[in-house]
Length: 275
Image 1 (tube, one colour):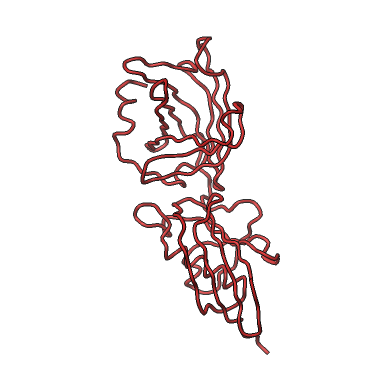
Image 2 (cartoon, one colour; image 1 turned 30 degrees about the vertical axis):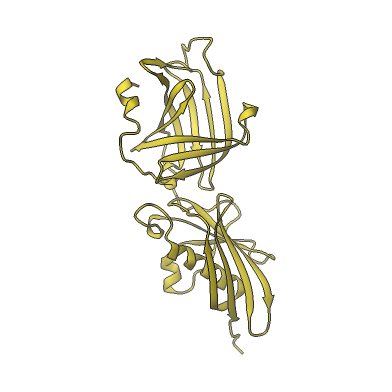
């Protein structure tokens, strides 16, 4: 990588969403720039793989390539896994590390600036050694179905034209005490900045609660906690608090990556059963 290329990483306006980075990436370059000096910690032909899954999980490994100089400033092999979040507005990608080859990294958040140019992803960060820049090339095809739900979820029937056009919904443990309904945020459910539209999140939560409690919505009270982005998986746990002959009281907590996005309290009238 040239010095000019490295210094231009932050100069371009690019706002890839979480869906755009899904899949596997092969390491094509790893440099550390400090002033006019350029270091190659794993040699000029490093090896590595980076993976982002639709369920918000990531994993990565880095290792020395052929002809790498001994005595480099980092281990011959580094790997870790955990969860990730992408902030399109700030241009940052955060790896929330859970475990890896370096125990001291477990439980930390590693923030990277990103640049996405077609099938090339560049991640960079300022460190005490200088600016670390990793270039990744997409390996193979992107996931065939970006909408695919996490394991355990099955399609949920969406009666009516409106709900079927709103999005694709899935359910897990529908007959349990607290079933979960999920959906993947797509371009049609997002605003121009790549964030999930508040109207869609309300529609999703209302639909999920209506189907699970089997009632007509009489009242909803909603609190928006944080945003979700295009490509994110959002799921809502439905809890029925009280049921009478004429009313159903229920709550829903919608989460993304383990963090609350939306909390809703609802009042419903049970569907009338046909004689």
